[in-house]
View (cartoon, one colour):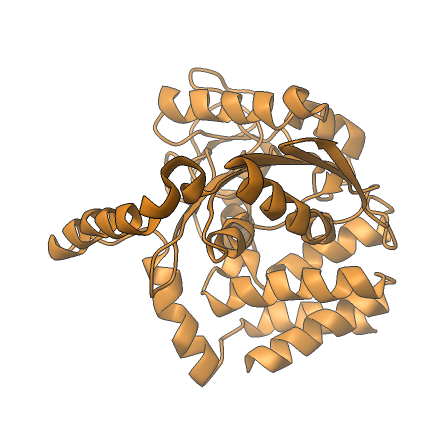
Length: 331
């Protein structure tokens, strides 16, 4: 498919299921970005996830986010139960303005439904010359290190760093061993998952994707990923007055829809610390990136950036069964 075909498919499906036009545009672009950058679990597959949340009334399809100028360096956006993308777009201009004025600023998005990756948001902010962090919980799918029962969400962390003359440095990873969407894609393809991703309902390690989805995912790096996951629960839950992953799962009440909760975004303007010297120090940072590449190592996001021009030129591949399932949503 061409990216324009992916975009039109996404828009058509979302409109067919009653999503209001302001949401359609930004949600579709997130899906296109995932497919474009070869992040298959965050591409058109997510249409199935988004539509289920709409169908079961777990997202407000015409929600109008409310932006609150809360404090000199703080913005709050009440998403009013809608998808997070529009809330972010509505809050972003004021966030950037405050970061430029104060050197650092925070955006708290509350009461949003979040189904996508965080990297499009930090990449957009890094493209404005800002350093950005983003955090969000999800549903309680992940066991803490040493445990066997779900308590944490996949709890992604994303970071963006502006780079002169090239794509920004971006990483985005779940604090679980893998994104839940990867396990779901393995289940759809009837493929085993690697050991270390999850335990089954009996608490024992499993390579069966269905058993993993019914059991508990595991954190990456054992106790280290577990500590980071707990941090995300705290700073993107109670700190901003929103739900933990366990509370989100309880609110879902068995519907198996996208998580409801909040997102915390922190933004730093390098000029706020460095003044006119900011550009010089950002150029110094390039030595670190060059050092990684010279060793033959790969920078995070490099795979996505390499896929991007190929997708723009040649289009993207979508599994036929997945495409047919998405097309069926138009009936």
